[in-house]
Length: 290
Image (cartoon, rainbow, N blue to C red; front, top):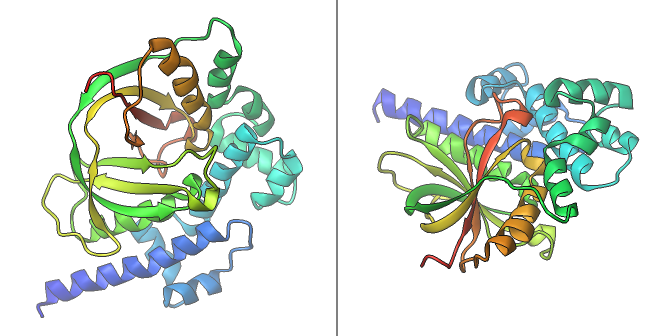
């Protein structure tokens, strides 16, 4: 074995170890995160593993935990009547004041204001008005795309559990670069399907050949004619954009959805983009142009 090949396998091994760490974090957001426990999961020295995590993920462990907890908190604020005290506690803060400061720093407004005026609010308000409010929806013919993918079962809010190892797998094989595109495919309606049974697929389109290896598989981003709504804001509050697209635009435009799943393209990166500046194109396949 050459030295270069050995180093590549070592990097892949490190990525696999730290993928176990991120999966644990997603499953234990309500718990106190113990650094020594994470070192055990990574099978790395407690003196050094967090530096390796930072080097490979581009953010510290504390930043990852904080980002994921606030992401979940935005969903609680947008879609539940949970009290501010309860949300603060579930987000790892002992009081509302500390939670408010942290949320305001990332989302540009305090949580109480976000509950009333966040990205979800405009879509919700338009559904309540008789005349409705128009948002730009583009009819676009898209070509099918070959992608590397990892399937996810469970809450759509936790599809990052599939994206994190997928990005790591691609990075270790030199597949990330110019022209890369990131998609999520969502197969079930979360209003009707039990959360634990929701099926989705994290996908990365790369501009070069690759050979899939478990848990990564080769997949296809569907082609065809789609209604495309560009959503700006946190992923956690996207539900109301979907409600508007189906309940207002689809019925008002007289279009018929095709027999295929809805999918999303993520146009920037939540690791280095403020939640309110995240851009997502929501693709709703249409049957009318088949």
